[in-house]
Image 1: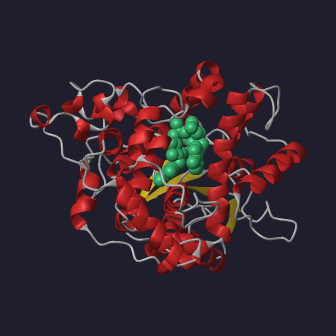
Image 2: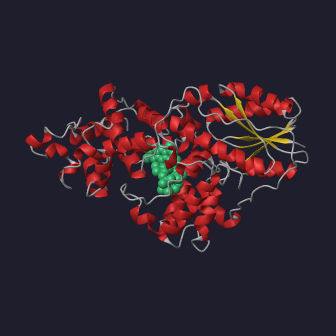
Image 3: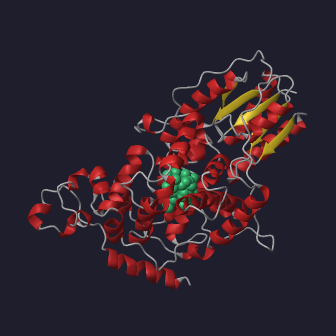
Length: 474
Ligand SMILES: Cc1cc2nc3c(=O)[nH]c(=O)nc-3n(C[C@H](O)[C@H](O)[C@H](O)COP(=O)(O)OP(=O)(O)OC[C@H]3O[C@@H](n4cnc5c(N)ncnc54)[C@H](O)[C@@H]3O)c2cc1C
């Protein structure tokens, strides 16, 4: 058998379930393939920085695969509907008679995979798909009544008990199949329709070795302080592994295995920093399960359907100010500028920026969700949608509508001396640690020199408006 391994968001050779299964079965070589889908990617609002990141991983993946006698073919299927035929053609051209891939859980991705499976099976090629992007297949972690969880804490409890029962197996690199006469493709420098993002590639190097080093360094040096420091954006306290988990340069199994090894094999007790980090990785899993249990969230619909009745404001000027980091609220502006500059935003700030858009500006969460996807190197439908619906009080286990962040208090609490604001909003650098959180309060004379906007909304009035709107749909 010669399997074709279809890589998607699993750009690694270690602990890759589909690759390991293919290598086990193969007696006549293995071929790898990755498909570039510029049209679909644009429709899905994939960020240019993320596409560049994928290309960097593909370069590393190609070398790692070739070391193991596996060529990597790069094909193009403009949209997902073009994928089945393109993939079948590549299978025929490379004499493959089986297909192996790791499952994805978004609605369009699942439809694409069903179409591929149907065509391959009709044409007499065998297909195997695997659980890999998450530790447990969506549908495995269910309530006592056999339903998908809609709340995180009981999901996590069940999840941890299942890890206790089943353990976590990390598969080593696959054995080397026999060499074959198929040449790898060149990895393109750019993908049409995705102009240079401007994000420094050195911030996010490609390759599974780099991802592994990032994980090891985090566990060695920072994980123990994680619980206490994770909310302060000026501190480098989190793992910054989200882009790597999203591209599959590292697996959630590798992450949890390493964290548990550093915690005497415990998952929900022991070292507080480690336990907290593990629970964040499980949030990611939770949101992937939500995608399958409640597919409407993949289709721009709220988890809590009654919130469809909220009449969000239409205000392009406010939306533009938020996008540009010109709202007059320094922490919100610093957050938005961080995302544009480095393609990533600190978790505390994602909540602050999303709450500000949905509660202070009272704009539709879907506008913000989309803007984030277009700029994040770790943009992920499940986690991004989950985070946005949490902030908008429309989602699973969401923030209650009456618990509204005050952007100025958040700033005082989590960036007390203004170090983070100074980095991304340099025009405020001259202000002292007190007024940097609320420049509208500095004397008029000084304000004129600041070149910084006055707050575009009044927080207190905005808060009243939201409370009224949510109460009205109760
Ligand atoms: C509005 C909003 C949008 C978001 N959009 C995304 C997104 O597009 N992609 C994305 O990966 N995360 C998203 N998150 C979740 C979270 O902000 C990021 O995962 C985190 O900031 C990544 O940094 P890190 O790798 O240093 O995380 P760490 O703190 O080191 O956490 C480890 C891993 O756990 C996962 N994780 C951590 N927090 C969360 C969370 N709240 N929800 C789901 N998974 C989590 C991530 O995979 C992360 O890499 C969003 C959160 C909000 C509030």
